[in-house]
Length: 123
Image 1: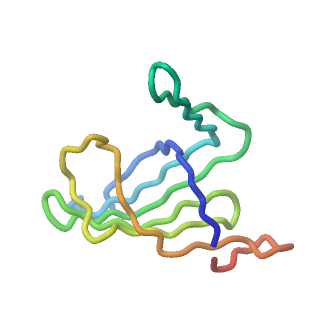
Image 2: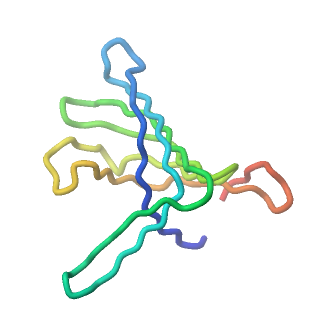
């Protein structure tokens, strides 16, 4: 399997699924973009610019297992049939962070279209 490195900014919303609000369903999107990192006299600089192309979609279900802990499973789709399935590594925890938007997950598999077809196959 080839390594894929990407950085995208997903925006959207999460809404409660149950009355208690302990399960949330998230749906977000991210447009194609170009990330440029350069090192110069002022140190590291980075820019994110719009790029032509489609968008990626992110869908997940978050289950709060405690006041500050959760489990999350979901998919990220990059075009038709190209999907990553992910889940939290152990329990996720809500806590102060250098990057409050960070979340660590484990890839649980993926799929991509078979050559010459539009349907997905396990990857």
